[in-house]
Structure formats: structure tokens, C-alpha cells
Amino acid sequence: MLQSMTGYGSNSFKIDDLEINIELKTLNSRYFDAKISLPTVLHKYELDIRNILKKFLFRGKVELSVKILGVSEESFSFNKKVIKNYFKDLNDISKFDKSQLLNSILNLPNTINKSKNKISQKVEKKIISHLKSVIKELISFRNKEGSNTKKDLEKNIKMINLYSEKIKGESNYHKKFIEENLEKKARNLNVEYDHGKFEQEMFYYLEKIDINEELMRLGSHINFFNETLKNKSIEKGKKLGFICQEMGREINTIGSKSNNALIQNHVVEMKSCVEKIREQLLNIL
Image 1 (tube, rainbow, N blue to C red):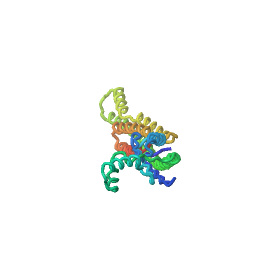
Image 2: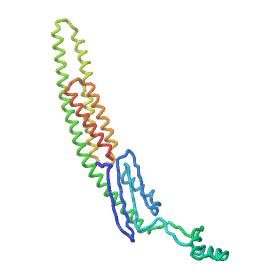
Image 3: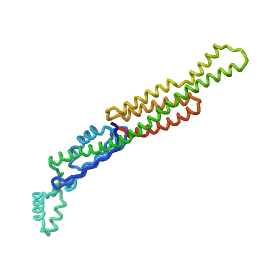
Image 4: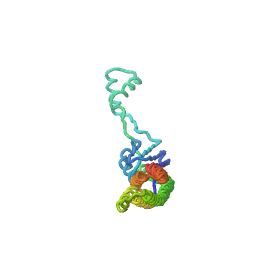
């Protein structure tokens, strides 16, 4: 299973004359980074919601928005006792017009009570339940994106393996050609030379351009990459990225050690595949 870090999920439902809208989006990020927008009545659940998101989404830039329509942030009521006392005291001092007096009193302290609105526990539980459904929808989106990316990764890793096999065949042919060519030139010199020293120098030269060890390590990295792609672990983007980095190093070494034009062309193609893989892995969980 391969999961993308790009995902989307949403849900709207009605309960107790309230309409609740939940929207969840994720993008790629090296770490878990959540931006949560909640109405005041749900602020006490912010930490719990953050933990739920982290438990299921692991990594990425997460944006959650929960909106409740049909409930205001605050409710207001008149403090009748205070208003009556103000009215009595002011009326005793002077005979004001009652309508003007009332308007003035309402601007005095403690005449209006403000309180935070609450929603029922049933509604709160329903919101958490629907949030989990939205997370499942988003994960399904991520899995679909990941499945498409996996096909591209497999295609590119297959191409790297194909070019690696071509390089192996070309390298063996190239080494044999160099060996035969040097021996032929040595024979045509018509001068005496130390055959033992000549063979030793030729061995050192052939060893210097030998890339079998790099090809073997590249093959091991390719196998490890494929095994990691197939395992059941959800978080594997960073691991695959590390393997991709190691493949790139071996390919660079092959390119620097070889002076064969055909091999160099294959190296360029492999580097292109590695770069595509690296870019795709940036969005993999």
C-alpha cells in the first residue's frame, strides 16, 4: 500500500435544528502540521481532534474546518434586577422621560448578561463521529492517489533496472575491447617490454574503470526499493526517499568511472528516472 499526502474529504449533516459542515484537506509536508478552525463551542475538543488527526493521517499539512450554522457564539439577556435598581435610583433623583431613561440605563454596567452558547453532548459526539468518517474519506482519496503514484514509481524503477542490465553488458564488452586493443598495440610496438609489468598496469587500469561493484549495489537498492513498495507499512515515503538517494549515488559513480559514450547515455536516462522518483516521493506518506 502506498499513500499520498494529498487528500480531501467533507461532510454536511443536520441535527437539532443545526447544520454542521466539516471540510478536511491535506498537502505534503515533512512533518505533521495541523491548522484547525473550530467554532467556540468546540474549542474544548481541539486537542482531542488534533490527536485524532495525527493518529490517522501521520504526516502532512492538515487543514480542518468545522462550521455550525444555527447557533450564535454568545447569547444575551437583560439583568432585570440591576435595571430595576438603576431605574428606581435615577427616577428618585429626577423625573426623566421613561423611554430616554431606559436607553441610558442599558448603557450602564451589568445591565446585560453575556454567556457562551453550548451545544448538547449528543451533537458533540455526532460531530466527532462524522469527523472520523471524513478522515476515512480523505484516506481513501490518499490511497487512490498513492496507487497511481505507485504505478509510476514501478515504471521508473523498472527502467533503471533495464538500463543497469544494458550497462552491465556494455561494460563487459568495453573492458574486453580495451584489453584486446592494448595488447594489440603493445605487440605492434616492435620493442621489448616487461610482459608482467604490462599486465599489472593493464589490470590496474581495468580495475579503475570497473563498475561491477556499483552495479551490484545498484541492483540491491532496486530490490530493496521494490520490497519496500510491496510491504504493508503505511509510512514509507522517507524510507523510499533514502533508497532513491543511494541509487543516485551509485549511478553518479558509474557515470564518473566510465568513459564509454553508450554507458554515459544510459546513465543520463537513469538519472532522469531517479529525479522523477525523487519528485514523486515528496508527496508520499
